Amino acid sequence: MTTPLILDALEQVLLSRGKPKGVIDHSGRGSQYLSIKYSDRLSEAGFTVSVGSVGDSYDNALAETINGLYKTEIIRKDGPWKGVEQVE
Image (cartoon, rainbow, N blue to C red; front, side, top):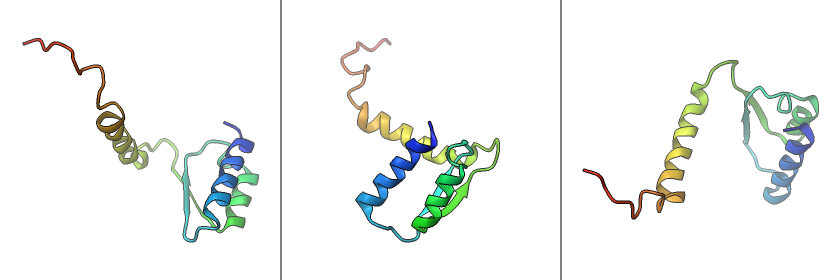
């Protein structure tokens, strides 16, 4: 991922949502998210910047759990287990 790519994504958000108030941009420590251009654009848009600590996966654990449950229960609800003969 590169800085221009995430800047494009940010611009798309701003165009589709207007200028949302009270937004917190929480990201990891990827170089594209810590770039001066991205940080400056977030400030111009009025976003509060939040960056995770190094080596700390706990802040993302809840989000990953929710995403996993969503995929299991909604996206893959007709997954490979349907129609498969049960072994007892």
